[in-house]
Structure formats: C-alpha cells, structure tokens
Amino acid sequence: MAAARLRPALSCLTWLLLPLFTTPVSSRTGVGVLQLGDADFDYLASEQDTMLVNFYAPWCAHCQKLAPEFDKAASKLMGTVQLAKVDCTVHVDRCSRYGVSGYPTLKIFRKGRDSAPYEGPRSAEGIYQYMKKQTGPDSVSLWTKEDLQTFIQHWDASVVGVFSGEESPRLSEFLKAAGLLREQFHFGHTTNINLSSPYGLQSEGVLLFRPPRLANLFEDSVVVFEDFLTISSLRRFIRDHIFGLCPHMTLENKDLLRGRDLLTAFYHLDYKHNPRGSNYWRNRVMKVASKYKGRGLTFSVANKEDFRSELEADYGLDSSDSADLPLVTIRSKVGHKYTMREEFTRDGQSLDRFLEHYFAKRLKPYVKSQAVPEKQSAAVKVVVAESFEAIVNDPNKDVLVQFYSPSCPVCKKLEPVYTRLAETVSADGHMVIAKMNAVHNDLPPGYHVQGYPTIYLAPAGRKDEPVRYEGGRELRDFLHFLQQESNNGASKQEL
Image (cartoon, rainbow, N blue to C red; front, side, top):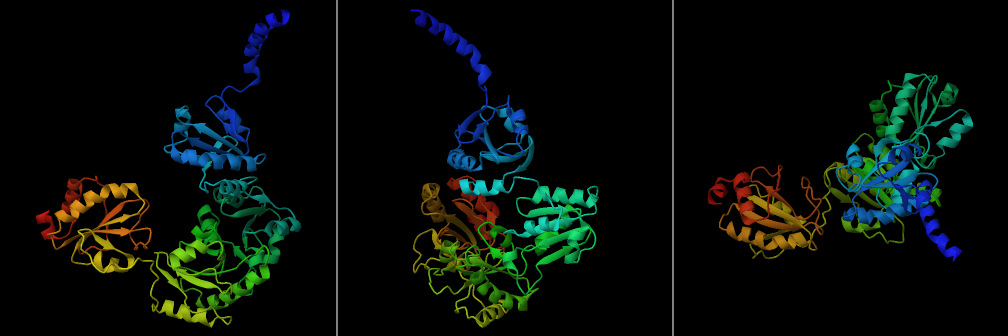
C-alpha cells in the first residue's frame, strides 16, 4: 500500500524535475544530427567551431530525400563537424533571418556565425568529404622546413603565403582569400621568410606547389607569385596556374576544368596504387601538349573507370577495352565534342595528328543522335541531333521546338495540346512545330534544358537568338506567343 501511495508522488516529482535534465527545443533526430529551435540556436551554434545546418520543411520531397544522407554524414563526421537542422515551418523567423527562401538550404556556421553557403554534393559521402575540408583553420601556420615539407605532401596543390610578420597587411588579405576559397584549395602561410629562399622567393609573396604525384620534366613544380596581393589577384593567380600543363581530372575537380576547351586522355589511372604506371601515359600526353602550349587548349588525364558511363553515353566510346590504351576526347567550352578514333601510339604521333586536324578545323564533332526519321507525316515534326541544323535552323522558317523526355508525365499531358497547335498552323509554310528527345540526342549550343518540357522558338533570320517559351500550356497561349515572337510577316498575319 505504501509503495502504491508513493507512485503518484514520484510521478509528480519526475514531471517537475524533467525540464532540469532535458533541453526543451533541441534534440538528436538522427545519429549525430541536432534539431535546433529559436531558443537554443545561438548558444549551441556558438559552441561549435564548424557546423552544417540544414534548413528544411517536412513536406519538401527534396528534404525527405536528403534526410537519410544527412544522417549518415553526421554519423561519419561525429566529433569533427556538428550537423544540425531547423524546421522552417516551425521556426519561420529564424529561417527568414538567414535568407532561406527554398528547401533544403544548407549553410556552414563557424562559432555561431553564418560563414558560407554549402555548395557541395548532397550524398552522405559527398557531404562528409566536403565538410572534412571545412575543419581546422582556413590557412595552416608553418614554422619550420619540416612543417612546409609535410604540408606540401598533399593530394592536391598547396598554396603557401610567405610574409614578413603577423602584422603584414598582405597576410591579412591572404587569410581573407583562404577563408573564401578553402573548400577549393589547400592553404598555408609562414612568417619565416627563409623557408621560401630555395624556391626563388626572397621577400613576401605566394608559392604554389603542384601535387608531388604530378611532378614532371615539362614544367616547374613550384610557381611564384610576387605581384600586389589582393583577393582577386590571388584568385586569378591560382586559377591560371593550379592545374599546370596536364592535370589529373577527377569527379571532384571536373567542373573547374570544364570551363575551357579541354582534351582528356582516359585510361586505367590510379595514383594511389600505381603512380609510375599512371605517369607513363601522362608523360606521353605532356610531351605532345608542350608543342601546343598557348593555343587555348587545356590537357588532362583521367581514370576511365570514373567516367565510364560518360564515355559511352556522350562519346560513343567503349571503355571496357582491356588493352588500356588511352581514349582521347576534346570537349569545347561551348559543348562541341571530338573523339580520337585512331589508336593511341606510344610515340604520341597519333595524338599529334589528332591535334593537327583539330586546330585546322578538319574534325567533325561527335554528336549523339537518334536515327533521322525517313518520313514525317505527323503534324509535329520529329527532330534529332543530326537533323537539327536542317529543320530548326532553316533560316526561312520560324520553328517552335519542344525538348522532352519520354518518361516525363508533364510532356505526355502536353502532347494533345502541342499536336493541336501543329495542326492549327500547318497551313502556314513558314511555321514548323517540332519536338526533340533530349535524353537520346545531344543538345545544340545555345539551348539550355534543365527540366522537361523546355520549349524554344528559333525565329526566322535570328537562329542564334532562340527565345525560351515561359507561357501557359493552353492552345491560345502558344498561338499568342507565336504571333508576338515569330519573325515572318506571313506567320503573324495567319495566326
């Protein structure tokens, strides 16, 4: 009986004491993920050197897809980087304060301060690798020769600032740049001027050390920067010299390299397990590349296993060849693609011939295309990559072209309206309504497709200025658009 009488009292006592032992707002929602609210965000964030915060909405499909990846990354990062999340449907003011306008929005905080947007991958491994680079100082302090040698033995290139003292204004500017660029480059600095003497730098400046695994006889391993140091000038210096004559293209740096005309030799490259074999073919590429220095073409090598699907889908190349001869491609910055069909010879002469033809503009670009239809009886004309020039770029016709995916439900829903549109304007010999499967055909330059359907008008006489359609999906919407934007007088009168 006594025990029974004590239970209500204990329950009341537990209820009264509970707030003393729990956090009312924050909680662990996954392994290592902290759920934050308005009441505890500021003080908990300020306790973390580095924290990645996911601002989300529970109803958001992209947020739901990200959640398990975010949890896995938090588990791997536990003890190094804190991962947290904020429900923006509950904590509206907090999300508004940090400029959150879409979900999910990921931001990096340092000591409670909104430091930078997260711009890395959305997979668990991608988040892990990206955030590992965010730990520690923006730039590592180097004091001795041993510090420097250890620092530059890195997978990526190393950027080392050399300054006369801690009060140097150049050092302050260098550290600002390191804070902005740390996720892309590896920064260190020293106030021991003697460390730079072996590399030809006798005063303040910056040394760029290329990765040791990429050392070669065709270029210097260290590049010196002695110009006036600003964030802009340092960024430009790194951009112009970071890759050297022939960098190793990876899945992580490919986007940085592809902003230019780029030749890549793909083979079984593995610098971790076979550095000597990996450099065998790279040296042969570099020997030829050195002849074409300054011609506007960047050279690179890559592991063809990492880019197998791209080689097959985008270039029509079989990457399963066991001979391990390099497969060579060129991708221009405007999207033109070329493949070296001749077998790569060890003396480099086949690559030399390929480049001679490329610079002489004798190469035909590779275009992924479905077969050109033999007959076109339907009102909506089918366009493929190989017929795009003849149909869409006909200088005398206004051509409305829809880029679609066969699996897109919105495209299927639009089909009857689009067909009626084609039938309505069929009597106008100056107007063509067309469609192109954007999954199985390469897109022409100037047409940007990020979702389906995407529709453009290529007006007569202005084929280099396609007009993107942003209107409604009813027949009258399309007719009004064509009347306003078509270039043919006949078209305007008849619509």
